[in-house]
Length: 169
Image (tube, rainbow, N blue to C red; front, top):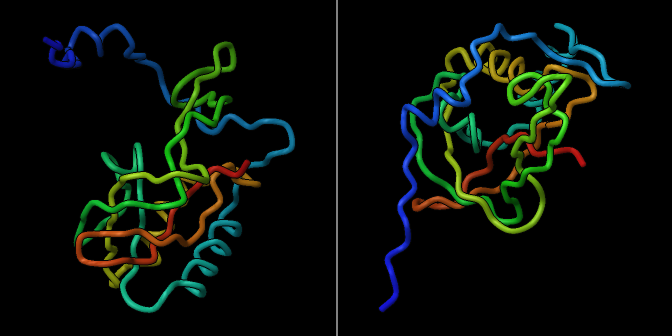
């Protein structure tokens, strides 16, 4: 008789073993990159708003955008992005998952497959300010490792066009 699959459990002891109590070092630039400026952010937000699809403004998030979306939203629901999948494809993270001495590996949205994530509908009132908060977290360098783009996401109530931040190979 086959055994039931083992259930994984995250305990407080597990978290204590990996928790680092250090200050955020801020963006850790790599060769050929520079910090994004207020002018860069303004241009990015202007382009997002200029190219947005008709209707409500949606963002599609995986990983940290699920548990900390960084922006106000008035509705959230699960969605499936076909043609995209989560992958450990960013191997030089010095800020959140590693350091200069021991770079971390990070998941990002990459081409191919499909991926379940969260869709957040942003309120129209204050939309520009919310986008500025979001991109300052997602796009701290130029060029960005995660350039924004519009993708189609399937939901139980139909498809929506949403903004996301996939990996730039």
